[in-house]
Amino acid sequence: MKKQFLNFLTLGALMGSLVLTSCSDENDGDPTTPPIAQEDRFITVAGALMGENPGDGNGGTMVYSVSIEEAKNPDTKISVYTDGFGVKSNRTARLQSSEDGSTLFNIAYTGDNGGEFSRYNVNGGGNFVQSDVSVNISQYAGTSPRWLKLFDGDKTGVALNVANIAANNAPTGETPDASFSYYRGVATILGLDLQESLIKNYVQYQIPLTEEEENAGHTIFRLDGSVLNKDGNKLIIGTWMRKYNVATGETEGNYERLGTKSVVVDFPSFANPTVITSTVGRGDNSGYRSHFSYLGDDGNIYQATERDPAGSHILKINESNEYDNSYVFNLSEALGLIGVTIEAWQYAQGGKAFALISHEGAENSFVAWLDLNARTASIVDLPYDTDLEFNQYQGFVVDGANVYLAFTPVGKNGNIYILNSNTGVATRGATLVNQPGNHYIGIY
Image (cartoon, rainbow, N blue to C red; front, side):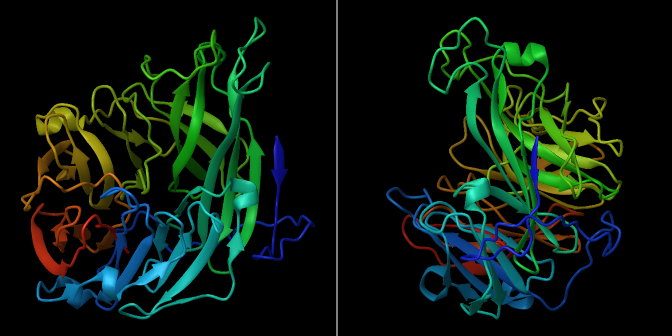
């Protein structure tokens, strides 16, 4: 296992010396305490510009902020594409925000500045001021790292990458011989100090599956969707699995999937990786551009799946950091639909959540209200449109019992909606002015 720790790394001044560092043991409060409503904060909306095709989001990202009262008011008009601020990113930016909405955190995705972490002060409207200190993590996690902010009082971000997947006996692309035993990549887990714009530490190692699974060609293709457990001493990381044909070395698109897997590592050291497996879900749980696992008020972690043959599930990981396979919550069954896929979701409070979903036979996406305790779900009453897509959706704001959502079909105007997690009722807020081919992708 290769393990390295870095400190005081800034863009253009990456130091060669390695210094052992650790995260603070200070806790800003019980992580299972439900969020308190904030009367005075900015709500930032983000919009993705089209590249070559409508809705592809490959033209960059714009942001614009309003007060929470303005966000609630349908008479407020927000035009992020004409009045907003362009954050650094060659394609869609990977944004996160501070808990009070005063700061945006961004890692540029691909391009010349791919992997560059930046902080922006949110000052209202299109006024965002970038901090004069940034750090580039591309030499450790690549120019397209997956990353999320942990729920630890805005202290830590975790970037993840899996690179150079190859057979143990041959470079990628060559046919393995009789001595084949596994395909593995090198996983990178990197901790960012969000306040000081520093790399806290990083580790690199291979993460093996069971001998039987690896002999069949299964491997971890991607890591993402990390979340801290209740005790704050373990990080649970989602996986996206892949299978190779061991005779040809080619990837297989249609295969019998394994049970859903997570990687559990010590925090803050990222040491001692272990793999836990669900017997309930068989999909991936890494998410795409948003959190896919949340610590609930009850101390358990709730995790969504995608690419699940039986439809998306919500899985439960208990306080012992193991899957609770007695907890079965299948969204297709709960909604009475076929092939439900969770595209993004947000835990609110008291076991209530909202999921952005698609399903077989439907052209557009929908919003579902979830009761994780009762294991029930229903579609929220909203003005759905055939051009509504949530497959690139990233950010929500939880304000007490309310969840703020940007709801715009591709190329059409929409609104901020305030979703009440106690009732499942949506209230229309500010108008989001759109442009052809563009769509709003999050609220922060």
